[in-house]
Amino acid sequence: MARIVVLDSVTQCAGRVQAGDVLVAGSFAGALSLGLALPFGIRALIAHAAGVGKDEAGISALAVADGLGLPVAAVETMSALIGDGPSVHDEGVISHANAVARALGIAIGMSAHEAAQRLTRAGEPRAVTANLVDERPCVVDEVATGRVVCLDTLSFATADNAGDVLCGGSHSGRVNIEVLLRIVHPRGVIASDGGMARARSGISGLARLDDAGVAGAAVDVMSARIGDGRSTWQHGVISAANARAAWAGVVVGQPARAAARRILH
Image (cartoon, rainbow, N blue to C red; front, side):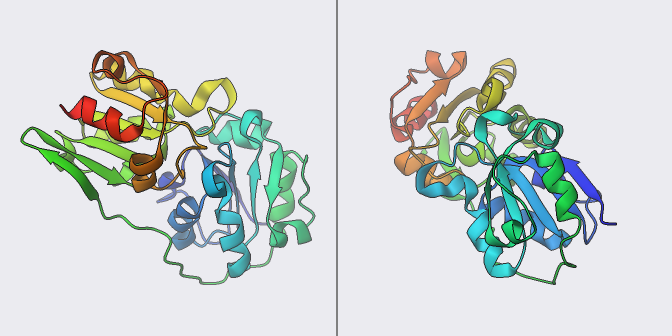
């Protein structure tokens, strides 16, 4: 019988996920998350709907995976903590499933735990490749003291981003911020609120940024495509900010462009 592997983030697959595993992840169920998991030969994926969001980016993995013959489902935004694999597995309630998953009996309203068990009976995964991940940074503003840099996920940051404001496609949950801070302490971070999710877990990393002396803010998931750092910059509208960001002049309702420039300057 196939294994069920539960992770807080798809970025944790290395050394933990084997070919043929059913992956239950705290990540949003977007095409980017799928792209990060596919190289490990997953049999199926259950992730977080993250408010679904602009252009349904929070569940964009489902349609892509249908084209690959891979079952994918997402749990309802408020049913589970985002960035918390055990919460998705133990408390999540399925709100979206692609055609391949539905053919295996995955239904709306089913517990994620039951869905994962059913997905162990999915067919053996095929070797597939999909161009779903773009690791390239995009510099959208630059001054003498730093830059505004867009990244589709904060895990793509490097030590070179120490003076930068990062506009990330990631949700602003604690797991993503802790990964980022192990890489670099940037000047500021603006990412998605992931639909806030249960217990406001979608912005739980903002307090951690405050503790690290980093300005942090989140954009409404309906204003910008989650998983798309450029969309965070171009379209995002601030929905939450930490004390450091507020001190810099970041306020709820502000365009992300203006907020990033406030932090940068």
